[in-house]
Image (cartoon, rainbow, N blue to C red):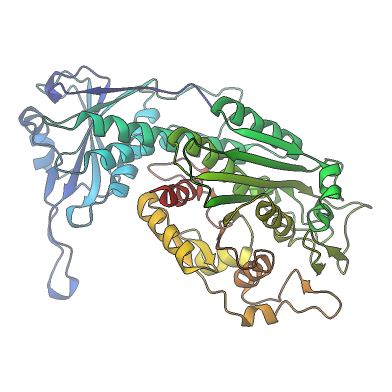
Length: 509
């Protein structure tokens, strides 16, 4: 985590703002194409500001048709006529009819990415008019912060391109308090998401379970959260045989990380449990993965990183609800000590597990983590994990998978998605999937065969949740981005962290 960028609000007319780059947003007001009834209508660009001087400065370029206001499209104008800004950046937010704060979040990110590409470290965003001030400012701050990240930490020629200052230019008559509150929320979310991404980006030799525990303790100390980090002795004390079976093949000791947020004035219930899979490197164990792309298996702790980032944001945003986070961190390695396919392990709950595939290890650590969160008092649970390749086959890199055993808990998560703008698709948890996990020698086996792998993995976890309301997030296909987006670098995405925070906040409203 770098130094927090300086944020400022100004109510100065846009023409008078002295800045390295002034970004102004625009939409296409033309109706959507009707290919059945003729050619597509030409774009009709509308700036999301009524500032007359800005309209005059942009008039010629808009008339040229070079800028169409497509989503995240940018066009840079040097020394705009009649403006004090050195550069004017036009940023598209797509069709006006489909404009949302989430489109504006990405557009703000696109503006920052465009500025970083030019080495510009001072950016002013013109807050769009006639929209909810708090929600729009929140989206702008979140998008800008997430955009201000690149994964090239270990390059010797790395240049610091981070923003030094971000200014929001307010339209006349804006509710400045609402804008300030929204910007604070957005920056808190964006920087916490970047903490998640920073942790996921760390290679396995530089982020062992022990070091992940140290990072969690450091964050908690900074934000006033309680944190305890345990290791092998605690796993044996708690009889976490499922968790221990994964870590026993590695020379690196495990870490059981417990973070707690207890706000003043919070009611006794609910108590929300956030559980994260923290496999800092996954070789597959004796069920060894193929060498191709194994280097990405440093990302197998993305669920744990999402929980650490979420706890940071929760500490900053202060919802009035108690939260406990449990992270189960280990390396999954092959060795003479590693568990073998066919072994039977006894989980913390006493349930026996036949391990048919040692590469299905995430569910083994989560089984004990979910049980422990319940023991610590969690009345509602949510977990996040890069759990299955099957969810990648089903949903690709567009949606993450989600499951739930409780409709009310799921409604809270749907509410959270409305706030976060992240894409999750609910997948089934029919009882028939439990039949696929029957073992001839144990209570349950850890894999269910070739088909329906995301659902059988979720059904395995459900065995350790019982009747506790629970949401499971399988983020295997979306936690890593191979190709950069206009609003976000390639590498770790930080997926699920914003939605987890909003899920927590939904219980406090």
